[in-house]
Amino acid sequence: MRRIALALAFVAVLGAPTLAYADDIDRARVLAQEAGDLLDDKKWEPALEKAQQAEALYHAPIHTSMIAQALEGMNRYAEAVAVYEKLVAEPLPSSAPAPFREAQVEAKQRLNALLARVPSMMVRVHGIPKEKATATIDGQPFDLEAGIAVRLDPGDHEVKVTAEGEKPFVKTVTLPDRGGVTLVEARLGKDAPEQQPDPTFIPSKADEPSQGPSRAPAIIAFSIGAIGIGVGAVTGVMFLGRLGDLKDRCPDDQCALEDQEEIDSTGLLGNISTIGFGVGAAGVVAGVVLLAVGGSKPRATTGKSAAAKVEPWLGLGSAGVRGAF
Image (tube, rainbow, N blue to C red; front, side, top):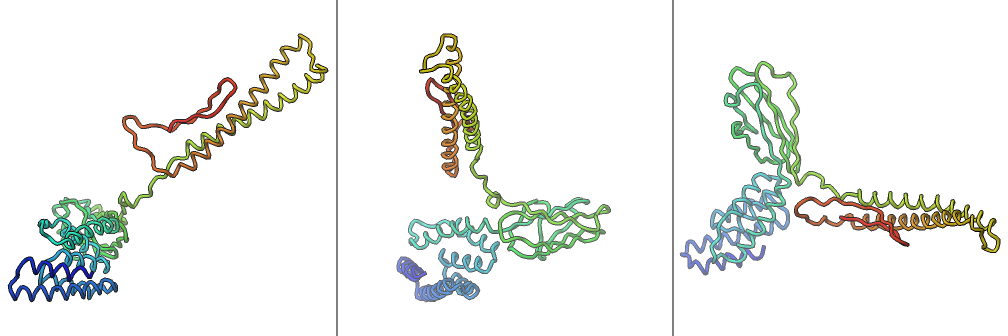
């Protein structure tokens, strides 16, 4: 906040103000400094008063920013958003001091953060033509025909809908301390229920839980690994059993010609067992890797969306798992 005094002094020199105008700038500078110190101490109400007094004497983006910050600190979110939006949209001349431009940049950042916290309300009328009804929120007119939600502060608000010859709709609605729209359905006319429906809260996109990366590829890889290990274990047991039989039938590893078919089938079981264990190990490794990198952001794709795919492969004397992500 110490930049305020320097910025206003700089403007005073550039503007070559009259004596009376210079006095206003000096007073505004003092008030702005006091407002800045109060904001630092989170004394929102006196800070708002000082900043408004400074702005009344001399318009500066820094004053506007402090007003919005004080309103935000007082949980007057809707007003704060309006002030931030006004400041962000204000055109600044190329000769504007750097602190003024910095105040505008900071206001845009604060506005984006605040918008995620500002609730809104929309009122809809059923049972009678909406042009025959009148609606207010906290005594302030609400345009039913526009069909646009209005920003409000968190907390309780009184909604009232009236129409000639109809029982008025009056309801207290509590808005949450987060973005989103609360939809109030006012049912009038002969079919109006004794118990009006509760408001419906529609969360904003920022309020919705983000969907984490899919674990399907890792699950597929682990499944393939389990199958491979299972195949390797079963065929391994069969291989060892047949190998034991061959050793009994072939003393000194010398087998008869009629045992060749049994030798070939036993060797095949041994190869299948080896490949099964290889695929199983590769599947487990792939699953661990996919889980490890699953938290990274997905890469952007163009054209058709790419689907994750994991599949085993077999080759002469080798085996493994391959995938596309």
